[in-house]
Image (tube, rainbow, N blue to C red; front, side, top):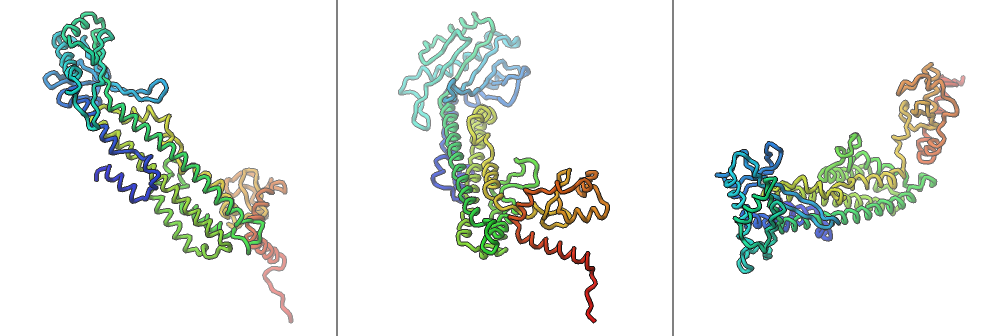
Length: 480
């Protein structure tokens, strides 16, 4: 399937919002611009069988080579071409330019032969310039093109007003030239139009990204405000949805919807759109299996959950739209190079990269997930983050050793009794022996008491039972 059809089909199948379509890369229109560039090159006599631009190959001095007709081409061809794109002084216009340099210093060619090569190119270009308006060729968009500027050694300027005295002008220029190099500067029209159009579409994508990012941040913050009320830890567990929301967020984090959390590199940990969609579906399936959605004590909790799911799918849509436009951007530059051989697939992105957050800005998924983590998910601490690594239950009365590791006081007392003085995780010498009342993490203790009341209650029951067994022993009282 051709990419133009694939692009259109993807936009329809993924149900991309209609208001976004105006900001999408206009692939078909850009293809027409490329056809116009090819047409202009052919009108100037620069079709492939006359002037093949070998920008992928290099001469011995590292310059790009242009070869003119088979009978005139060898590995030491003195005709060199360079295609460049630059921005105007104010950065609002893109100015592409094709410079053809003819080197008269090549010893393997006579002056007459070099002159023949130069005149061959020059005459083809002048043929177009000397046409009257009625005889001008028309491109696909109906516009007539006579915008060509030719300069040779800053001494001869050939423009649409040229008199046509070719041989005398060039020979006079050559005789005065000290550098023995002539330059022909060709300024096309459709290539500038192509780059300007593509740059404008990147600008539209930037605006859309900024707009949707603001909407997503607002959605996350609004959901966070609702959840903060519904899962208020100061309300009795029987009347609060604290534990229900904790279960929802635990399943969400375990699903790793947008990122793989065990990856060290952010770029490699970020999921692709297809995988994100599968992960979201898996998250919904797992949440339903837990039965938590039917156990909410407040109707607003279900509404907040639906808003949370909608926000995730909103972010997915934006990422899908970004992904397909990134592909379209890469594809259209490759097509430009394939049909013109002008080699801009690397230079154009490099030139405009600093101007567009669509290309170089931080990942939208990374930004929104960061906001989600701080404004929503952190509202309800997860038990895994506050467990004692020894007994694997909540670290009630947490003791932070000098090495930084945290354990519940019960486990540390047991270790002390067993004459174990080093940290059981990092083997920090004397960490347990040096611990005293000042090592009690009061902030952590308050948080655990506030957000894990049921786990703390169970922990205290276990502690009391252990103390009872230590004092009374396992022998039961026998009444005779």
